[in-house]
Amino acid sequence: MHRLNRHRTLLAALAAWCLLAGCLERKERIIVNADGSVELRLLVEGEDVADMDEGDRLPQPGGMWNVRRTTRDTPDGKRLHRLEAARLIPGGVELPSSYAPRGDPLEKAYLQFPGELRIEQRQDGWYYHFTRTYQPRAYAQVGLLQDIAGEQAGKFAQNREEGQEAGLVEFKGVSEVLVRFAVSKVEIFAREAFLETNPNTPQDVWLAVREALDRLRAGADYDRLAAILKNAGQEDNSKVFEELEREFDTVTLNTIITTLQSSSFVVSTSAFRQRYEFHKRAFEITEDLGDDRFEVAVQMPGTIIAHNGDRQAGDSVVWVFPGKMLYDRKVELMVTSRVGN
Image 1 (tube, rainbow, N blue to C red):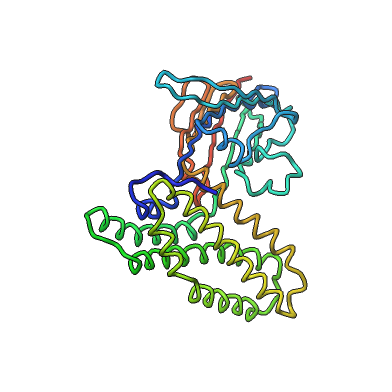
Image 2 (cartoon, rainbow, N blue to C red; image 1 turned 60 degrees about the horizontal axis):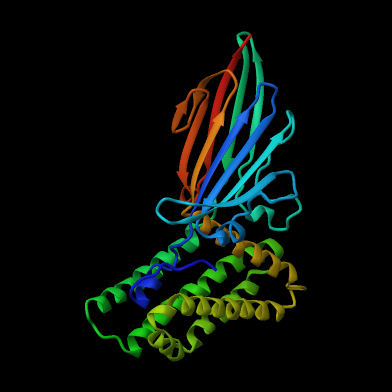
């Protein structure tokens, strides 16, 4: 469950639904050696240790990585949790495309960054071509719904901050925004899972699901939700929204599964549920990555002759970008160096 920023009003918290409180500094140094081997050195820091354990998968002790976890205090009184990891990849061995161990059922849900080192001999020496491509993270479809919900709720929050009173009718409107977003979000993940696990099922099966979700939206107890929102104290904002989000996640998914099980074309929903959980988890990881800061330095043998980095420092090229750069687009790192004959 992602974290809500603290705001003065309940409605402002809803308007910032998609904002995250956690942030990780992710620094990686990649050393390309002349013999084709590659050294990976990773340093991750953050104030909340849960960001390292519950978001994107990071190297774990006991595997192919040498991992050390410590804490340090900053001059301004903060305590930072640190993860340092190192790994040597022999020449000719495929570079890892994620930090998740192979065999992890959610391996593809984590950040993907396939890379390659290609060594080419020319008349004037050996050319080393290193590439790494951070794969795009699907975000826009759900992110747009979050923006719309936040905009609608934000208008009401502004009215309250300007001193306008709000009763159950106004809070009922907010609860309708909440339900509309929550149900639509689950529907997006479920639709992807359904297409993957039931590719040849007639489309009227899914249209029956849409009708069931329309009934769910129309039949929600908005008076109860309005009362919950109105009575929630400022300190309970985050807890209230997390509980309501979990409630509608569960209700919506159960509605979808029940409808699918009533169709003679759907033999089993177990595979569907697994893929749904995959897509839901992948989006949660994408959100967590959004406010992370990436700094990747690649050190090359010989002389660097071309790159697409942000800056060059001697035999190294550095790229710096925020995690939200991965939303629906790839980030490509390229550098070429030459070792003369």
